[in-house]
Length: 296
Image (cartoon, rainbow, N blue to C red; front, side, top):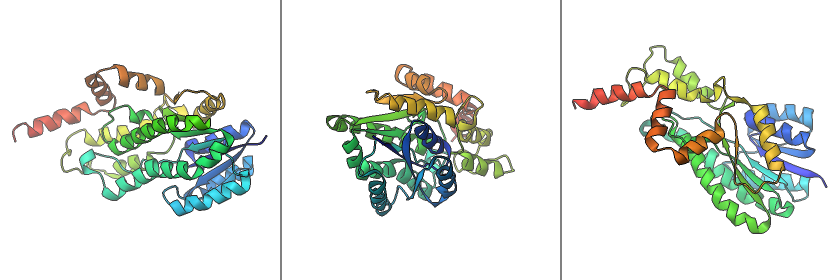
């Protein structure tokens, strides 16, 4: 029987490589993305016969139209619904985040995945298939300057955990993938904005202290570390785990994925904070702020 996988955010990064990994395992792959994903999805259409669907996961009407597109291709079944679409479009101190950027991030990373799951779930039930979410170690670690992204990944991990129990009676497996370092462009635009500031200062009402700019840049470059796993290797690893029909809820991939998950549950909060603050050049910033406000 033909196997079908639907991958959101298929035009670039992890989604692009997931589509190819499923194709290597003889799936018919449907890719869903916005108009910005069209070039990447068209390339996959030529390479692996990807079925491209242009839709915005934050738009319910788009998703309802996509349901009919999927039905026409698969006959009403999906072996894998892979909720991968995500953005990291806003960063900086939690108390200074841009309102519109924050709303957009949560719409894509949380509500969009919930909408996709709601409207595509009958297809997965029909196939007794799997629903997979690209979560992150960001859901586990206190990485300053990325609070909104961390919160969105924690939210979707918890949503998936509840869904895991609810879908068991239907024979549907649910996985939340705790993703460590993977070399993608997800936060490149944030790093670019920081580097544009030639003064060396970071524009902040509360955090404009020495070292802040370097610290924010370190956080926004988290996926570009030389230790990060390639998106292709990550996708191959995770698709293999999904294919094994494992009953495990959390799957792990990327650099440090399992280790940081483990550390969160077994190390004291102060150990986590000290480790992350040291690695991402945050301790100097916090020391400067303490000194700055000590006399006020």
